[in-house]
Image 1 (cartoon, rainbow, N blue to C red):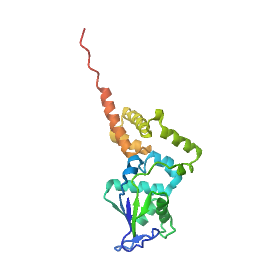
Image 2: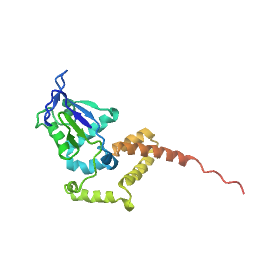
Image 3: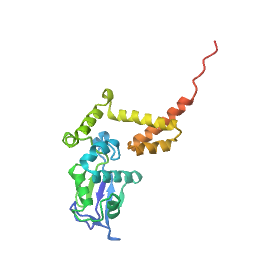
Image 4: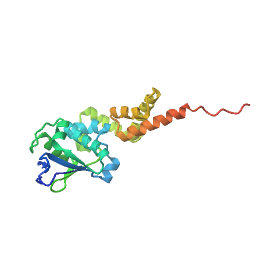
Length: 223
């Protein structure tokens, strides 16, 4: 994602641009694809990020990344953010000075390599967050370090995504068996913090599996 401050903004990362029309601080946000990280990384709204990155990044940075990811789903070419509205929506207050919470949140994205400044008024943010590096793992409580290691190893050394997929399918099928439709099942999986793409896949699979099981097996010929 790119955050581009408008023409009146100074190139300093801690200063915000202002809309010439209304005099309100604004940000331009656009995608920044990274072929390597996008292949192995995690959606900012995923269970992995909420469980393991949140204690490292902090809630403000995590919620900003989630907020931008959601907005860009509807507008993949980029979005215009009203900084005051966004800061208030994320619980970061109304102050917009260089030391204000919103400015510190942007800086924290850079500090943890989730973003980088690309010249005056240009701010690039990753579309997907990488797996935790060893230096980040050491910052987690011991219980989460153990959980992270177990999930990375997986059951029978299967990739963690496959374990999550199987778990999501079981939950989705249970919901469908209880009478929920595909859309409701998908929304419930999202509320349970499943990655949106995985939630969609699991809900669709559960509906198909339910339909498959409802078809009676072909009867054998009478002997």
